[in-house]
Image (cartoon, rainbow, N blue to C red; front, side, top):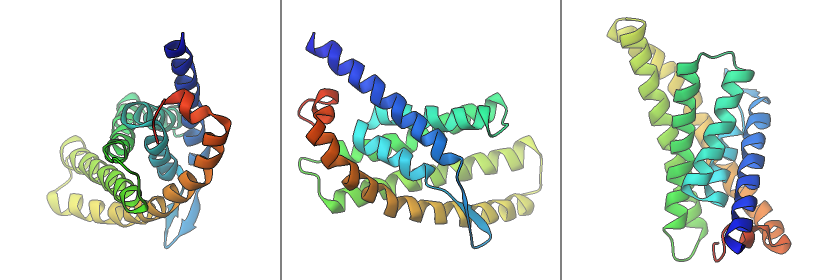
Length: 188
């Protein structure tokens, strides 16, 4: 019976995190000719709180739903978004869960690795689409990649700062309420 209760809490919290990713993606702020948002920070937070698989599903699902319902993207782009955001949270969650004791340094390394994983996946998607789907010459492909790399790195830096702040803000409340132990007994 305990196992079943833990599953209900985990699934519910995954759904809450996916919904939070979706909603936060709606709000973007202009910065240096680009738009910054906190959705990637919430994707990282999903990995930090839920672990690699559940956090990855929450991050991927929330982002994919945004692309499908509010972003106007086709099925291929929605699936690519799911995979890239899943990987982002998976890497972050994997690094955090591999630690015997969670330190601020480990938290920052996990957030940085997750953010850079997403940037790499996004750059790979950009290269493949520009070069092979649209058939642009290599120099145009590289120019497009550079123009997308700068905002991606800005978002990665924002996420790197915001995710640990959000984590430390939520963790005491989740511990005090007992939700954290019901989701992952003995974790964090």
